[in-house]
Image (tube, rainbow, N blue to C red; front, side):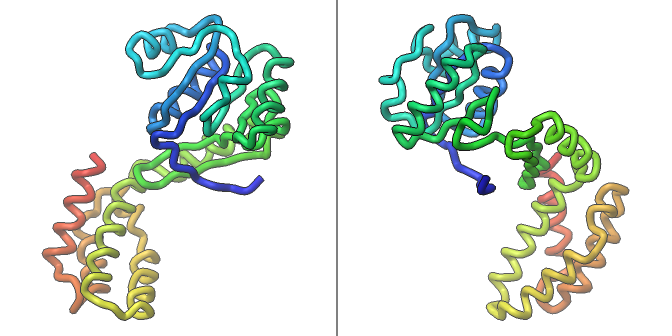
Length: 226
């Protein structure tokens, strides 16, 4: 499997199935701006509410191959294995990406176990061999990458943009960014040693970014993440 992050904004995604697995798929798709079409005989309460509020488009209880017309992505999430296989085969013949929850190897892509810390997304996949193991690894990583990574990355991103605007020396900038990245910034954020963070970054950026501006960038990053 080739690891890839996709923008699903305004993409048409068809989900077939109305149970808990389908609900998890739909929630994520809606969160990422996809246009979701749903086919299912029975809906979870959340899916029924999403249908009634027009958050998703409900196409009825029964799937037909014509439902794949104009679709970018299909999710086979029913309890009917024959139907799931049919979906995967028909999606493949139409060159439509397909995720098959019950038998990932029969589809053309897998959805990894993932979590976010602001701009940071960490995803884990086992090529469908063991989603349970992927979830376990994800849980371990969640403990290692705490909420401090959100303001950390927002601060570094804003600082990087500011430095690039002030200096066109790419090699010198890269060296500067490496020195900043080597600082224990996440530990200082976690223990709320903000003054130490600002002083250390300002020392590295002396002559390019003022102490006051470093402090301003940090404050903005912190407030945005809170």
